[in-house]
Length: 61
Image (cartoon, rainbow, N blue to C red; front, top):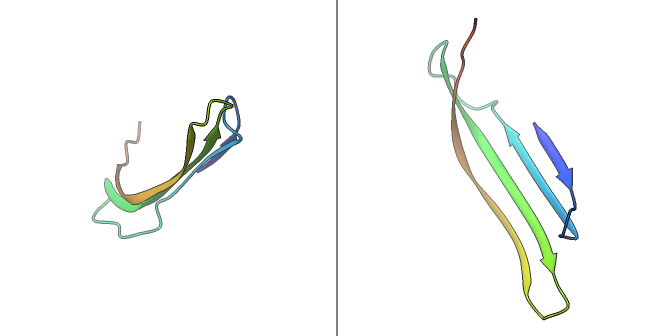
């Protein structure tokens, strides 16, 4: 999964992948990263990348 956008920020992005360990048919793990590059004329600056593990649940219907 991946997303890229802007809005009020210079750029926002979000990437997630679940190619990690599959515990069974319903639970899997992976990693996710989110980046934001935001600044305004008042001097506020927010330029950060956050990342870490994720757990997923597979639901089939």
